[in-house]
Image (cartoon, rainbow, N blue to C red; front, side):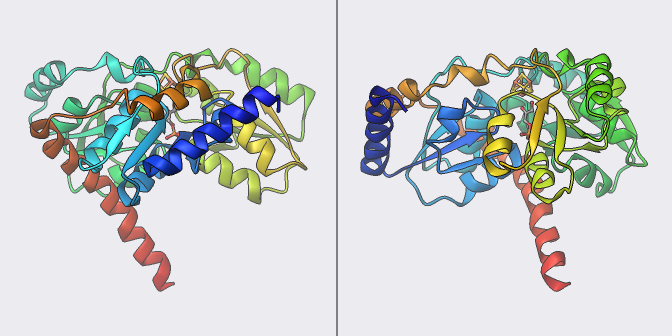
Length: 314
Ligand code: 13P
Ligand code: SF4
């Protein structure tokens, strides 16, 4: 590391301690941001971590809906998003107003909302899910009709795994659609013994070519336990940093170099430092929306707790 970067890292860590802060980073963050974090994970793991932390300040290195979820769960904490313009274009295709109108068309449907959504959309939903638990969440509903928002591809993939009628919102991730079936076919011809893992935000034509369909946290777990030495990874390229660091004996190949989320890349170590210096920009949700959104997020987290209990009994 260059001297300037070492000094910057030291200053971030010093201020972090002084402020009583924890740094959470998503798996798609720049390598240098991940390396400064106390915890790196997927959306579910990050919200679980936020709900349990005793730190007074959370520096959230991710995109807006993730920091918002942390604030929904921990209203007494200060949640800082080092670049307030780091949004998620997929989350922003849906608004509470549009969802309320759609709910009127499907009065008998349960609304399941992907965590990649604004807080007021969560507030209008019955339960949340992430890519790690969408199948489990929907399987356990006691209704047969689901209005799933806003990712049509995660929704479609989930619908192939559950026995429910699913109405899909037409949103998608502009980064994951850049991964094409041809990319996988080409890499498979170059590395015939490679395992293929993809994120459920990918198109169905890509998903069908995969050995495993996993959340980013699931990918990190798979990479550790597989015997495979070469793994083709169909998701945002930032995850390759963590995969390679944790598994130096394995080779990870990004399915497409075009799968870069510009919003995730907005967070830099310098902006982390400024956030800790200024204690801003802060993400906070109005109390009226927060309370309703929290119900949907809590219901999802409760499912994880039930599972942990079942596992510990075995
Ligand atoms: P994960 O929850 O799998 O980390 O996915 C978050 C995301 O934004 C995928 O694009
Ligand atoms: Fe949103 Fe896609 Fe970026 Fe994830 S990768 S934060 S879904 S735009």
